[in-house]
Amino acid sequence: MPDVFASFSRLLDWRSILDVLLVAVVIYTLLRLFQGTQAVQLLRGVLIVALAIAMLSLVVDLPAFNWLLRNSVPMVFIAIPVIFQPELRRALERLGRSGPLLTRRGDTTNTQSLINEVVKTVDFLSQRRTGALIVFHGITGLGDVIERGVRIDGEVSFELLATIFFPNTALHDGAVIVRGDRVVAASCVLPLTDRELSDSQLGTRHRAAIGVTEESDALVVVVSEETGRISVARNGRIVRLDTNRLRAVLSDFYSVA
Image (cartoon, rainbow, N blue to C red):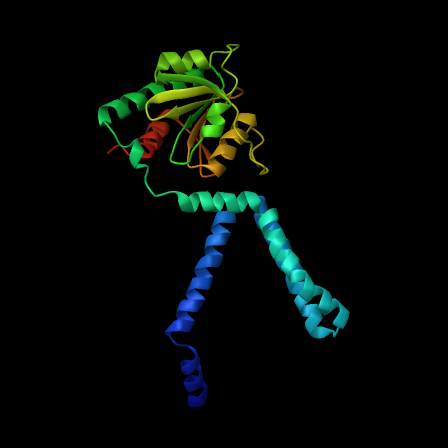
């Protein structure tokens, strides 16, 4: 028994421990990045197939089949970036974000005024069951989304937002992009998420809100046209809340003390 421990201690030095920890961190990070996406099911299927093939090759000697597997490995490594392109792009974008949105920190009075105007508008639209989609710009660029919309460049106010989302107006059907304290564009088309949503009451606006937050660090406020309920999406997830909670979420987003 002492010989076993001695052999184990010689093999397990600090480099081996560091090696195992790094592999564990990489695997954990990949699982966190792919969590809640279709890639999770795909990864599970790939792992099941890989384990089944490995067990088969160990139990039965199949030279031709083993040769095929060995020569298929390069093609698999080429196919992985293609299959997981959306998830890999999302992961690289998250890694490229440099922490807190320092550009959002500014005059506390102006920021609080902006939050008051947004909350007032959302409450007004919610009571009247008027659909709305408001995107708050983060670090990740949304230039392509803004270019597809109508340029506004107006100060955030209840009057402006309520007018944009008023039913049957030219700009009501689409998203409003807020950058800093300015409405930079309206009637913007957002990318829709590919995920299956378990809640049947989540419609196209909610899918668009989740879609743009999967690809950026933006925060999106949604008002349902059918129910008037308020939702907030961020990092690919969406939750329902009331106006008091909305105020807290916006204050946190804009880093108001």
